[in-house]
Length: 78
Ligand code: SF4
Image (cartoon, rainbow, N blue to C red; front, side, top):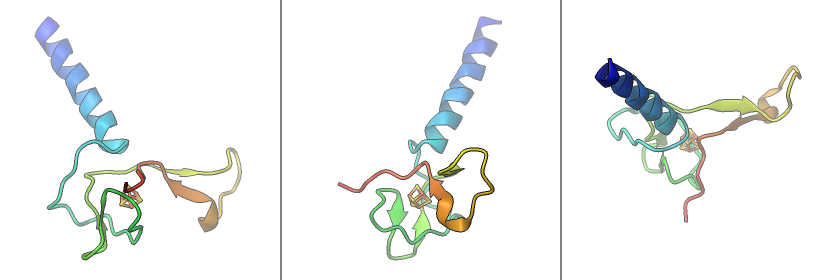
């Protein structure tokens, strides 16, 4: 039981880590992105190196337009 719970918690942490920018999956080119200032961007092939990302609206409860969407997984390239 303890082992099963620990395994489950590990999966949850992995998923959170993926979404908020932890794990890179260099072979997954399905997320196309041109934001070269992001540390997860592969500028030469124009894709995101993360396995998955989270996108949000900048306003809550609004009918968001394209300009009001942001990638929450963005991390500034320093
Ligand atoms: S985390 Fe977001 S902004 Fe950064 S490369 Fe991926 S999709 Fe683009």
